[in-house]
Length: 433
Ligand code: ACO
Image (cartoon, rainbow, N blue to C red; front, side, top):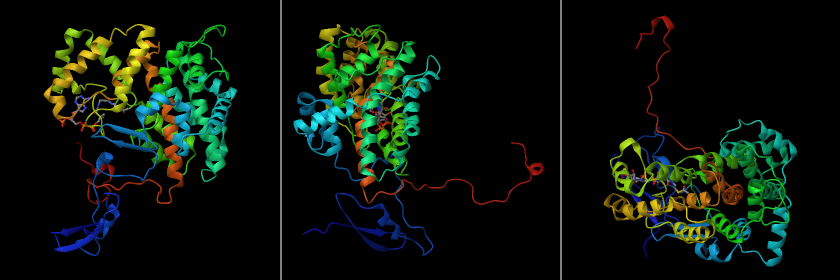
């Protein structure tokens, strides 16, 4: 029977060490015993961007990137996208099990009755420039919420944690819609508690004048499915930011604000906005080969936005579901003229050696922007449309981190590459460079 250990021989000293292997990992702290001298700090791992370092144990989301598998609490994403609703999935992510009808009713009621924001939040949002990007407005406003709920700092108190999580999930669509109305110079529309989570958000975005706006049921379901697909994705950049900031025991509003900041970047949740800009820049199907050529040559550090993923190396299972949703949405809204271009770009890229060799496939963001645009959203709203559903993933991961007795304040090590110690040089003795 093989032992679950790793034997390491340090060729610098000839010494041998035995390190336990657990869940396919070694604890890098176990390397600290490996020293060349007594006053040596000990061996560390160097892993910029956490390419091969697990930062936590988590029971929420499972991904097998080689096989294209994504599961929330063990349930395949394809089944949840077909059979479930976003708030049912939110309950699942937070509590570990699918809700009974009564549990779901209670959860929906709770979320629905926390959608309003303090009136001061509105005036706070009015202070932004007329053309402020809604993602900046969202991040700053969520950060400001911690000043409205000072008890949120009691992160060890279960009751406090749960009410803040409910508030975050419930208020995110309201703040997101307000950030859009601010950009468009339209008056804010208050939440309508008779509508579903998604229909209420769409109404707050779209209603003008009287309450005559009716959400098309196909679009309501499509957005609900997109919300399910975006609800969690284990230790991605924004979730890692939430866990890192949350590890200082700050309130969840401040931690989630860090997640919104990370999501804003074009390599993460800002990618769907970047895909649309890229498609517009290409402009015509005849220009696709030239564009692919310029990406491959690294010209202007161009990337094929919406392609590639740190974890998925076969396909992104969310992208498959999104393609189906896109067809349903386009049946209602008419085809997005950029769709043809996107399909051609995907076709050419998937045959090209450069992308094949590097295992670059369309990710969740390649088609989502086209759907959002067909539904009438400005490109600036795309990352916001990602942040709304990801809030539950951030909250579930934050709470798991708070309850994990192995977690401590996040504090990586570094390899110092700067100057050796030296003495201060007086101003008149410094040579000009
Ligand atoms: N276009 C062209 N080349 C690419 C792309 C792309 N989209 N993505 C990766 N590559 C190339 C890299 O240049 C690199 O090539 P090299 O080996 O010759 O140097 C190789 O593929 C490996 O790429 P890495 O950068 O090492 O992959 P990493 O895991 O660090 O990055 C990422 C993943 C950030 C998603 C990257 O693929 C990318 O920038 N994609 C475009 C942005 C995007 O769509 N982001 C959304 C991700 S999904 C999400 O956040 C919801």
